[in-house]
Image (cartoon, rainbow, N blue to C red; front, top):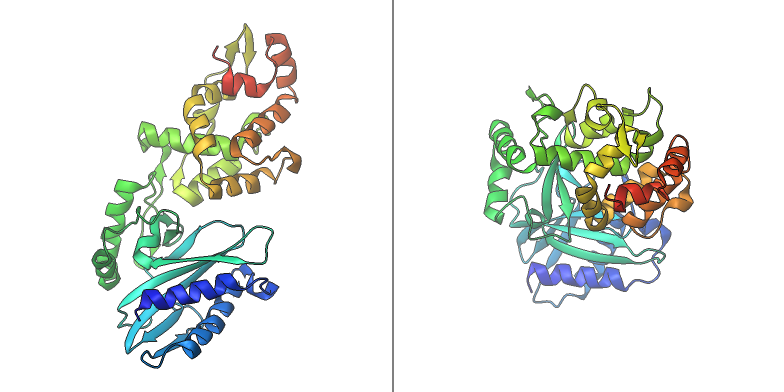
Length: 354
């Protein structure tokens, strides 16, 4: 029996438990029920293995990567445990600079439990850890992004490349990150290591495609701010999000979205932000239709801070259309739309070619 067969046994047993106790479905910070469930099920597998195989395991407490050691027939493997409660298959991974407390792993796997919506059950997937790293996102320390649905889009080309990074000293890891971020990120070049701080990139220094990508993202997440927000708060959340998630800064997001005065439609002058939305219609619609489930969840979280919950539909596009029409019923848009002979704001922004 090999390690993949063992992990498959564990996966099958976890998925067969119906219903799971609530304590095993928690996933909030250090309070993670999947981490409690895994060793209980693994012990069942240990007890059921034929005598021709020996399996032992050790769960590590505290900040240790990986979470569990599995020793199968004398060979040590690591298992890192992740889970989500909303049915998604992506989450934040471990810090690129995080050292592995133990050594001698033949391989390290990621086992991911995702709660089935409206059920007390988990679906489980596993893969070599290096394959599950779809991206590197940068907060105060660069972290891998875990995505179990896109195993062909790993940060690494091979296990050997991942093992090479693990063995690098800090200086070489910084160089690896700089090269990776330069080639793959929207422009994130700000992060902190114990010895080095790199400043955020200026919005003006992004490529045209990167500017469009970030602008559309902000126009979806913070459309209520940008359309009807007060002068004092209109750009605050956008600026904070751009810095925290993409490490892009701009002294004046007003210049990005609303500089240049009014925009005319049917001889009626609309605020420039409407013109910005119309100008970016094609990439905006593409993102609304093709965004990941995680981005939809993020959008719902941002919208719920200021907007009525009943505007949120089952799709990102329909929800955004509802929000545009809700905002379009407020001033100054209600009067302007009536004077221009346009039925609603979503018609102007998403469909009307004027």
